[in-house]
Length: 216
Length: 257
Image 1 (cartoon, one colour):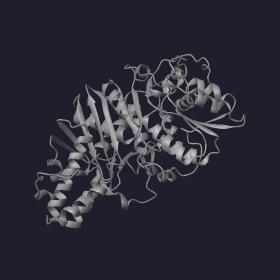
Image 2 (cartoon, helix red, strand yellow):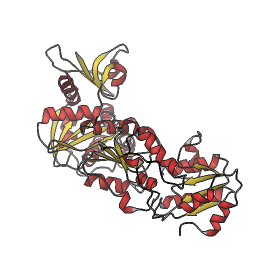
Image 3 (tube, chains in turn green, red):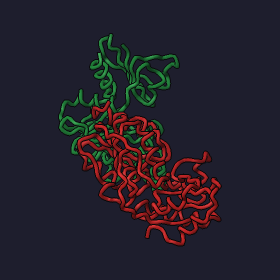
């Protein structure tokens, strides 16, 4: 059985019949004829037989991977951010910001490529911008560059701004379990003013794997 | 204040064929004065024109219900509008009433509904699809009489808030959803009843809905935070995918089938 999390930029797959190691592929390279048994993600509905709600997949993935009674799990994707908060094994809160939190991950990747930035060489700056959206936040970068600051430093402020915005969106917890491609961005994870536990890109995939097993 | 005798006279002297637009829950006296004349609820999306037309008169970032009122007012052939303002509706309705008065050549009657006679809330606790229930509550505003009897059901979920601009969000709730908030006040015909409006049932998973840019979103967020199984949700003109997914996931993860 093939499961997938079809993200905006990257899609993640796992074949339960194989050795169950997940793999990743750029969404833009997927063929239209692709058909998956169970899927989640922004692009999932058009590729699958059974679709799982993204927040449900995130929650189930968190239950499976974190194993704590209380936790906050934040997923930062290319297009949106969403979080789940559990208290004493009970759902306490959730949120999904697809409009005002739009394109944060995607914008960071675009900037990384355009300015050829190595995020592992950067430390979080002392200050940041007041932004709620990747697209609108770009104008802050361009404005900052006009003041004489380097593009790399301006982007670093932008990345920290995105992290602070996501932290507030998730309810300012003491510890954030982080999901999504931005787990691999050391500047982003270091920019949170709280403890960050990166869980990687496959949390939603783990969620639908667990749901599939529960229903079997 | 309720409604002045002068305004009541304006209503009663309208032609029998007159079309009267209402906004919010007008006082019972006003509804009785309208009598058999046609009532159009301007809070509902009646006309099909693009809501963006209203940006000539209202900011784009504004309550979608009041933008809808403006759009209906601009396009419907109305003989009068009765618009409730103040605690029973909202302060923003007063501003919209002023703008409508400037724009339209018909009587725009402002009321302050402080009716305290309780008509009951059988619909809010009945077992029926939530979209139908909400529509029945809204339609009930146009009648000065009590609602039909409905047996209360055992609730499995709750919806707190105002009737949303886009009812499609209600599709995902079970038929055993109880209605709270201002919608409950609407059925009771007491729109300015703070005690009733803030009443909740802590035993059931409840979505606290606010229409984006409506002042009541603050109370929705506050009550959701205090509720042991509450989720705050706001939505603007239409229900987006993420809003739909939030409702579905919340109900699913709360064990509501």
